[in-house]
Image (cartoon, rainbow, N blue to C red; front, top):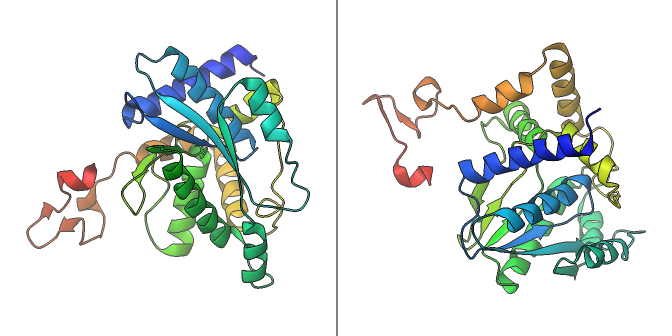
Length: 264
């Protein structure tokens, strides 16, 4: 096992690469850091606080947690932690848990509806707080898992981009941990002894397809080390002319339909 200094440096390098490669942060940004109480969002907050301190530009951070009123949610944990850390924060209370449980048929997963409700609430909060950017704690494994979920079950080549605009076009969403390995985050979280808050909604569901895909990727990585890194590189090296999407490539004229605006 690596020591804290080593794993911290690995995460910092990965986050720095994502920030630089995708031009995530600019002078004067106000970034809403979405804090769930899980290992990923704690690590993301620490990384962004580090870069706020050492970056040659000035930007602000506010940590925001959405209290979804899940039974047994320890409401004191995050305020205590963030106050001790000296971070500006806001706790938003909205009973999305009740809505999800009422609207989701028995035996169906709650993830899709929960995600939509949570996303809409956080987007509104970001605008109310005067933030122009919002940061989410998804890491490299999440990106790969989402790609294969879409590939196997939705019939599309799509995953979580490191940076994108919301549908309204008034908020930029960032994933600073896009190049970070989940294993490194887990190791870092153990060293830091974060006050982890388990999810009693989506995290407790069994037989999720995401769990199956996660295990598949874990098995592949065990059998063929570095396969995840290779797949991550593949997502950054796309050749529309060698796929089958007529909206991306004009097979009649044999030329790309990808414009500069589409790449921004």
